[in-house]
Image 1: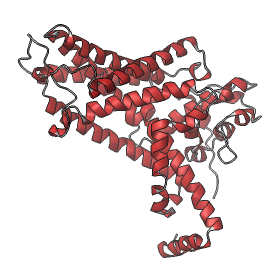
Image 2 (image 1 turned 90 degrees about the vertical axis):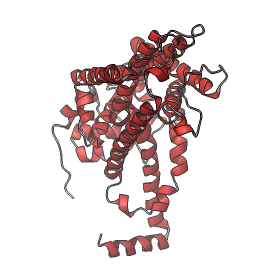
Image 3 (image 1 turned 135 degrees about the vertical axis):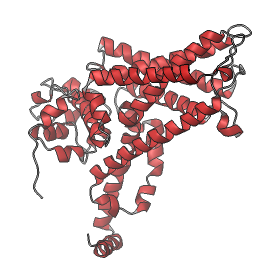
Image 4 (image 1 turned 180 degrees about the vertical axis):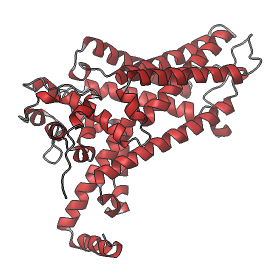
Length: 397
């Protein structure tokens, strides 16, 4: 099959933050020093070469950008200052936009104006919604959120939002799988995919591959932010009113003991988000690590929204706990601001931007393992090869 070259590819990927790839002379030192690169999955050199040559289709089908965790050795040792680690980061933004069938990711990543106005506009719509539909007579003597908003309505909206965001994200994950697997996606037995479920869960929860970087501080910070965010997401979206009474409600007018399980999870999540995002923001200001030397506008957007979500969450708990009755007006105002920050972050980041990496990375690892096992079975397992051949004859492929 003919290979199609796209002379505009280099110009296109520059819109996603790739600036120095032209400096690369293909010496291969970056791939040699990378602690995550292997003979089968060699990067960053291969990805830079595909970009320079305009091999768009091969680039989109490549799993390597998702197998890279920006350890930074490649950029530290590059004799040309080509910043291969940042090129890989930019390619992840580019690939996210290619997987997204809505086209929103592309606009979000390539236009700061669109990014800012999308977030601010959506936040203002949420604020307007509270003005129009919040409780008509909130308790101004005692801080009781149930008199300000109907918890059950908020939970239903949360579940609807969760379902829509999940559908968008999963559709993009499927598109990624089709690009990476090609014709194999329907040929590989379901049992092979199911056999990798454990690996999927392990890599999602632990970010295991990231821990192989020589400097594990970045892995720790990433893990802290991810687990904190997932904890809060689960409690707010799933347990807000306790799933109709099946479990204790997360949002309640009762001021719980500081050792209540929900509070303990909340303390961990708040600390994790504030510490992790503050560490990352200071690092980006100081540019003290390879991964922090170059910052895209969406990186700042992500960190600031996360930090504000955690901080306003603390203020809600503080204002409703002050004294005997709390501070009602302050509690309600901060609650609205909290939702105005948290919801746009979820809506834009989960399916279209940074948080989608949490799905793309482990799924790519699974697909890479599946392809490897499939080809090994074809080569060394005659009965498996025969089954594949018979199936191909039946389907006409």
